Length: 223
Image (cartoon, rainbow, N blue to C red; front, top):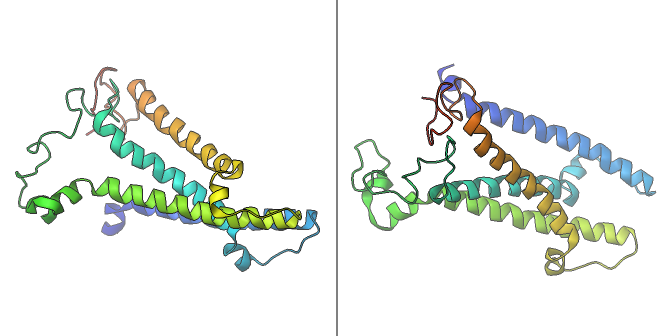
């Protein structure tokens, strides 16, 4: 029970992620077979659907947009500020901050080892969150494009139309329609959180300022 308490946030989101992924697979399979029958095609098994380009595209296009959101959030909050928002650093903290503030060269005994070694390892560790998030985003976006061109070409063949290369697909309206409809929703969500948290509160949440904090209090989270 202590493990569950100490990791409750990650366990909760992992659980609802798996539940919604399963729900998406079930609903997507039903919709795929519905479309197949409408076009005089053959229904496929659930297992085959899970390995299809159609399912892979739907999953990857959402995944890449989520990681793009957090990649941008990680890097833009280094430099960009929002007065009054707990999502922003204090107004005098823009930039990479001093080594003392970041405990570089002033690391404590309990600090991660790579934060204490200096040189390239510390430089990599100092940017490791951005590196990993950005890599996952690019990998997911690549997976979306590969699965997407396969699904697109399958649809083209169903309609006796010409198939396209992967590079051609990257410039197609289908690829960018799928991409941009996800990007805009993520950007709106992050922007809304940044500005709404200036004026609105949620008692007890670390994403909110204390209930009694002024609207101008910046970088102040509930402690």
